[in-house]
Length: 209
Image 1 (tube, rainbow, N blue to C red):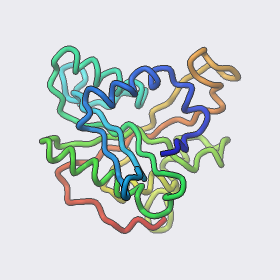
Image 2: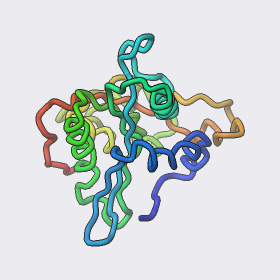
Image 3: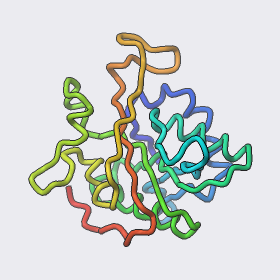
């Protein structure tokens, strides 16, 4: 399956380091959607201890980087996970617009529920934010339409699936240049942390945007 991620996503050294481990170690949390022999969508997630002592249910402020670090640290130290975090949901370019982007979070939540987890969280990069580079993420993330759903299409998918916007997960880099591992700050959009209860009723299948 082609990778439709934007250019800046390929400059995250932590992701490059830990992505292969997600495919090998907690492989039960890797989901794929297929049609025949073709993979049309994939979803990566990891279990971690959100409610461990010292964390107390507070989502990590740095988003997916810190979630990955916690997940593999917990795995190495034998800390029992209590939460599943989505890391990636990707739909093949030629299958976008068919509702798969909504079915994958629903499948991820069902998978977490089947493994006994009560909560799924997700660091989400708002897909429409690059069109408004000068709008503060704090304003953009909480903007809603007349029907009360988020203005941003990708945030809208997660809220329709039962998610609640928790907070902003800023990504810090020196202005105007990369820090060796990341591209310039102007190329990076802050993420939004989504929390959804895995024990809730299944997500709606009405996925129109």
